Image 1 (cartoon, rainbow, N blue to C red):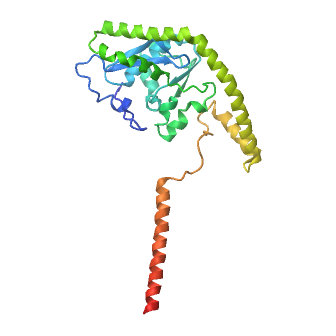
Image 2: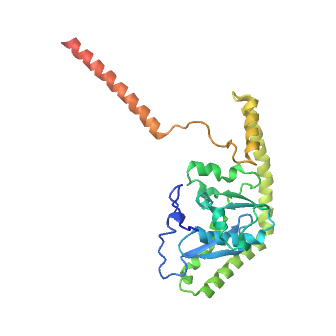
Image 3: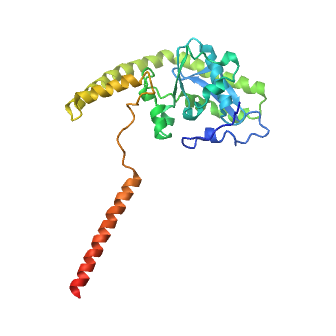
Length: 286
């Protein structure tokens, strides 16, 4: 199978474009890739692996599906990755080349693919619509940026690990990841209590805001029928994304190019009028 990594068709993601160019001569690994539970912010067992030459898809595929092999009975996997918009292309073709025990049963496991909320703002408009958490029910208002939390904690040991052999390298990572997970478990009681108190309060506020918004739409020129039609589109799109996306703007936006063109035309008309006036003034003087 061709494993050549395609260039990004979104913005210029370094994770993709550097995969075939990152300096790796004489190095056993250029970095580490991982899979993290976005609900509880914990490192997954068998979810960490070395990267030989940047974030190549073949490396990330293996790490992802090795970690997910422990969750074979999970009916739905909500998976997010900084470059999901590119990684998902030919994904199942690449997965078919993985060891059989790592290949998920797609008849019993559904995959929803997303881009974390902080990263998605850097993507092109079509990616922001297709891979946004905001449009999918059941994923809550989490930002799914938890992998960044773990890297912020672990990055300080990078300098001391550069000269380590593979055994020490992996044991040190295991120790730090285990410590991170234990701290999470030890603080669950306090953290979850604070979050549920905040969630109950926020739910009341957001339900009130939604009710006000819907009432204002009904009383506007759009009317109740427009709101009902849009809600029906949402209900049709949620289980079947081949249907028109109701969250995609259907209004032609004003761009800088069109504004400049309008200004240019207006300026041209003003110049033409000034020339005509000047010509008329010259004739009146002659």
